[in-house]
Length: 252
Image 1 (cartoon, rainbow, N blue to C red):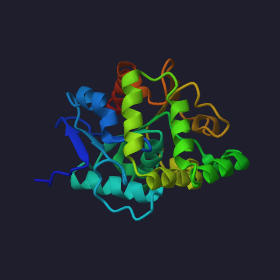
Image 2 (cartoon, rainbow, N blue to C red):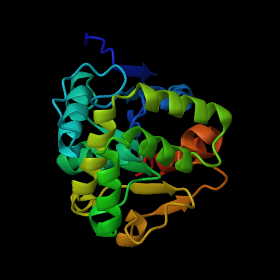
Image 3 (cartoon, rainbow, N blue to C red):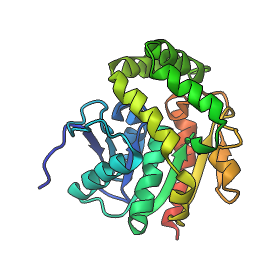
Image 4 (tube, rainbow, N blue to C red):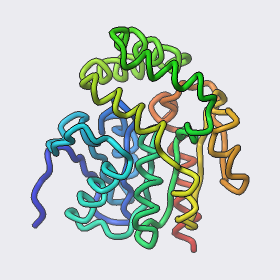
């Protein structure tokens, strides 16, 4: 019997396993609606990423996607999840991509919820100015302001949960996460995984460096009337899209 892990929530015991990965400054609780819904038909797992929530693994300042992906893979192996669907939101989408690149034969499908883009291709002056701000004594002000902007249109319950989790996340973890995004190459990593893929986007995710702009053959759909936390704002709509993706995977 596997040891219970304090930073992992599991639901269900049958069906193709699904692993849910949250955003920067989030926790596994962001996937509560999905765990309850898909736990009826699939084995589901959501985990706190390194430095977040109840994850007990010392992160020692390294929040690279490579490091976090290794932790996710080790956790999945510990729980006996050897062929699975990865569902990652925002920062968690980068983690999911890194996992798929490392173990492509074990990933049955990759769903990216409002994913990060290739920040290396964003305007250098904008990225530099933002990183200087978050690494300054204005860090809390800048980060909270950024979160408020991408929470535009959020349901009240989503806003309350997301802001509470942001406040509870160590500042150095948030800064380290932003730094990791500026260094990550999601395009090459995705090139290592040729299995089923789907991106679910919000309207604001439409930059020249967004993944669907850089990868023309990346299947994608849009959800409207939601904040960046689309799966929390409109769980029924999000779950229906994920369910259809699972049908396509399991039908092959």
